[in-house]
Length: 120
Image (cartoon, rainbow, N blue to C red; front, side, top):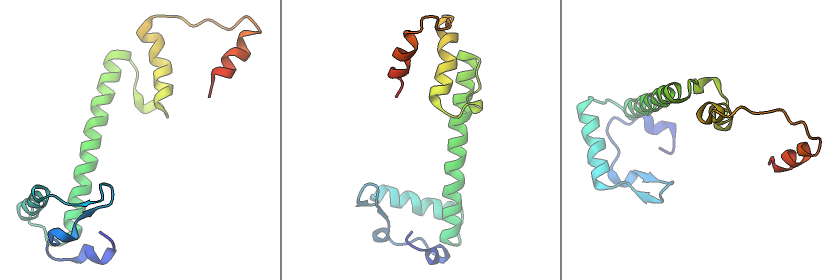
């Protein structure tokens, strides 16, 4: 899709119009046949309909993956990853739960610069 005007096409574009900039190659025959099958099965009227269906499918797959990840984290660590901004933050809280190690406060003044220099 190289322009919004393509969304109003009333038929699936020809195979040579599909090109992946990510892979620098055209679409395979199997992928194009799958696209044609989706077009017919879901009775698509325009490329916008096809685009919207692809978008909804991608979002639903991502939601399913995230829900599974949440369940795994809740089961293994008792933590909900949706409350964390980054994976390292989640790992920081999960490590003590997994290992059972209790972190101690730094009491030696020389240890602080050593730890600080190890932080990127």
